[in-house]
Length: 253
Image (cartoon, rainbow, N blue to C red):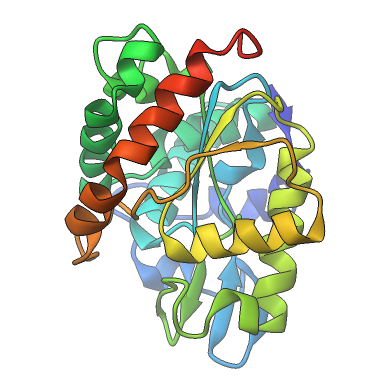
């Protein structure tokens, strides 16, 4: 187990104090106790799930930032794990399993990956196994590792544009660079949506993303993404070829 940082220690007492008899609400979590940084209406809050890193993963799925649904799932899992007396690494690992692309978008994500045939090259019945018994093959993360909200709403990468805002650009490029340095260079990286892809292309121009295997053109799986199906269809053939080409390569394990 690999922890990227020891930030959990800072927030443990506040997590333990959360109510356990009901679902957590924004009033519980979007508070000064968990606020990490703020720039005008932009607020970044702590969440424990992206602290855990699976360094040997074959597939790395990268979103823009955890949304409220993921944040809540991460905290509810972490609070239960702390109550059991688990160590920091286990707390974050369990939190990661509970929160990774939680909600309906996980189904959309799995369906698209299956259609591309990723489950075939990984020798799995379905990519749903990546979120279950075959979790060791998968690492999920976000450019902005911790949940970001704008005016109290999930940040989507569009307003403001990540690369045009100093705080978001610095954190996005900094977080992903730190994380990729710990991951297997042979892993397939799947950026979800245009904002993540644009940031990774910026990283390529800076010269530190060279040699990585990136699945360009994959849409964000959110049901709110009205262009998801058309983008997927438009890029389908090139993405399918990239998936099958990489995993046939003798370079890849």
